[in-house]
Structure formats: C-alpha cells, structure tokens
Image 1 (cartoon, rainbow, N blue to C red):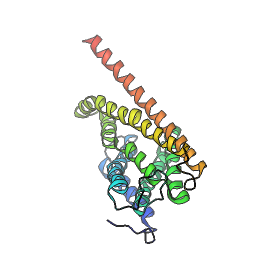
Image 2 (image 1 turned 180 degrees about the vertical axis):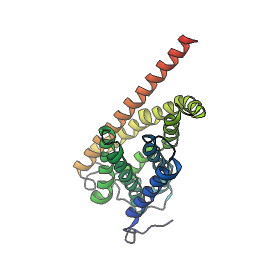
Image 3 (image 1 turned 135 degrees about the vertical axis):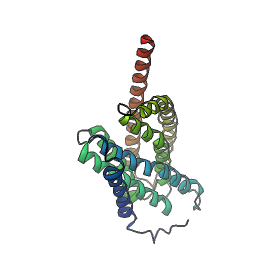
Image 4 (image 1 turned 135 degrees about the horizontal axis):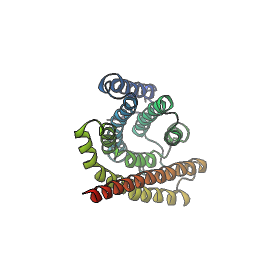
Length: 251
C-alpha cells in the first residue's frame, strides 16, 4: 500500500474521527443500551479502544518495518514517511474521541484526562510541528497498544462481574494473565526502549532533525506515562493478592 505524502488526504484525520465517534455511538445506543447508565459510556470507550488498539499495532508494524522506506527510516529522528503520518492521524482521532468521552462523562478523572492530553501532545507535535520522529513514536505506540485486547476484555468483564456469573469467572481467570502481560510490556520492555531512545537523543541523534524541546518533552510524557502504568498495575497485583489471601483464610 503506497501513500504519497504530497497527496495525503487532508480529510483523513476528520474521517478517522467520525469513524471513532460512530463506533462510540454504536456502543452507547445499541450494543450497551441495557447496561447501567454509568457503565454504558465506559463500555463504549472500551469499544473504541478495541477498534484502535490492535489496528494501531498492526499499522505501526507495517509503517515502521514492512512498508517500502527510504534509507535509515528506522532512525529515531528520521523524517516521518507518509504511512507513519497516516497512523498518527488514526491515533490522534482515537485519542481526541476518547478524551471527549472523559470530558463529557468522567470529568473528574483528571489523571486519565491528563494522560490523554499528554499523548495527544506527542502525536500532534510529531505529526504537525516537528515532522520527524515517527519511528520512535510509533514504536512506543505498539508497546502501549499491544495490551489493548486483554485490557479491554478485562475492563468489560469487570463492569459486569457483579451482575453476570460468566463475566465474574472470566474476569477472575483473566486477571493474573493480563496483569502479568501488562507488567512485562509496561514495566520491562517499555523502560528498555525508552532508555535506548533517551541515550540516542542525549548523544545528539536528533540534532538538526528534532528540536531539543520536542524530544525532551516527549520523553518526559512517556516516562511519566510508564510510571503511572506501573503504579496502576502494581495496585491491581496488590488487590489480587489481598483477595486471594482472604479466600485462602475462609477456605
């Protein structure tokens, strides 16, 4: 699939946004219409996350490793190629839609809103301001979204576990595997990749291609996102151990 930078459709971003809004509304008005009023918007958010996550991983792999590229396209400071720009548009559309969901339905979740706005900042500056670094950003996107199917299946089961026995069983069975997978990706692989990027930029790899303010701000956002993710999954592990400890004492 060849995408010409000069002929890149300027309506891709609004088109992707309309697609994600449509998927969200499909979930809210049809798929989850019988769910609790609080769960409906959250389940609809999971639906668009599913629609974004795995496609984003596959598109990023293709854009970064399989698509016909100019020399040195894997360079963390290389100029964005057209297909990488397309993937950035796809992800900007998703994060814009999901951020709007949080502003409308869960405005007090300041941490998650801040996370989404920070991610949007990285994508938008990479796409529209700097025009380089797409390989680095999409590599991180792959790591962030590879856990998406597990996380969203786990979230949907969590919403229904108190009302549906099969959801409770699925949630209980999936939890340790999801936590383990998430821990390896966010707590081990992610930091290793970020360390490699920081060393690259500190050694002048982005000189003349990516402004210092850009790569420093990107790394600050990404490091903080990893720290929050690690704290989140650590809390999940702690709760799991507490629950299983109570069960053992009662049995």
